[in-house]
Amino acid sequence: MPSPTSTTPSTTTSTSTSSATASCITATPGKYGYVPPDACNAQWAYAPSFAAAIAFTLIFSLLTIAQLILAFLHRKPFCWVIIMGVAWELVAFVTRAIGAHDQQSQAYAYCASLFFLLAPLWLNAFVYMTAGRLIYTFHPSAEKRVFGIKAISIGKYFVWLDVLSFLVQGTGGSMLSPGGSANTMKLGKNIYMTGVGIQEIFIILFTGLIVGFHLDMLKAERAAGNLGKGSTRSSEGRLGWKWLTYALYAVLVLISIRIIYRLVEFSAGADVSNPLPYHEGYALGLDAVPMVVAFLILTVIHPGLVLKGPESEFPSRKERKAEKKTRKEARKAEKMERKKGYGAGGNTAYAPMPMENESASENMRLTGDVEMGGLRRDDGVGYEAPVNAEGYHYYTSPR
Image (cartoon, rainbow, N blue to C red):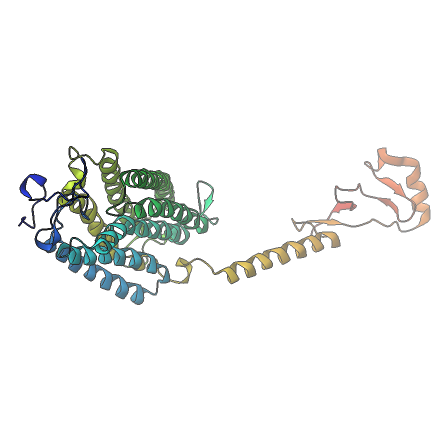
């Protein structure tokens, strides 16, 4: 019987069957169903460690519970996104632990792989959503813009880009089903790599926005002359905007480490000369561990500790519509006031200048424009001031 921890064909006894080919054999499963990764009936590229799976299951269980409690305490509904991310990691390692003792089960292997590959995308989306709210809450400008992009739109745009990456990676990941044909597996890896590459491009662009926000905040604090006070509101809450900004930087770096690992793993091919797919330690050390650290950072420096008060949340769709309606009515009222003869500055009135009697009007006709400084005749009201661009006669008088 083969050893359950064996990962090379040379230490495992396999039996050729009628279905054997020159490149694939059906091996006799050993303890816990282990067979060499090049066997036709292999569901895993290695013998998954039950102890490691249990350890990560406990870690992600604690992180899931912590995120649920923090989301409730801080009343942050958008935290459901990070809860989904850590929960998917939990599902991945629960199924991995079960699959470690049932390595011939395709369902366990498939679920463990798919949830493990896609869980970080939830974390990525949460970073986008948090950054948008951070900018909306603390940015010193009234417009709340970074490089011309509204804070309320930053999260929306990048979350949809993350959804696009999710769909691409999900399509590729679903084709990496154990036991699939070589062509299907190759296509799935190429699609998944494309999705991961797209994700990293979006992360780089997004990091530029965070840097822009960071620089704007530092500039505002220097202008205020009193670090952490004034319009930046960084003194509010137990943690300042800087801590959360640095936390987002760190999480983006950790996600990028995981992405680079996956790109190298899949681009190097599935041959045994590429050790990355055939040794569980690489997946745990370069994917699972960075994700644990990333979730831990956002648990210790939770956005709810920094984003406090109603102004830290985006206005609802109903509130935005009401605000838009109010602005529209204000513009309409301002336009009506101008039509009634009031200028924006408040010191210039627009009105006709009636003459006191007709004789004065006749006398002024003789002098014309020269003596009256350009005043012109209107038989209906006498001489009047020049006409402005809006069609009103004007003269200047104090109010």
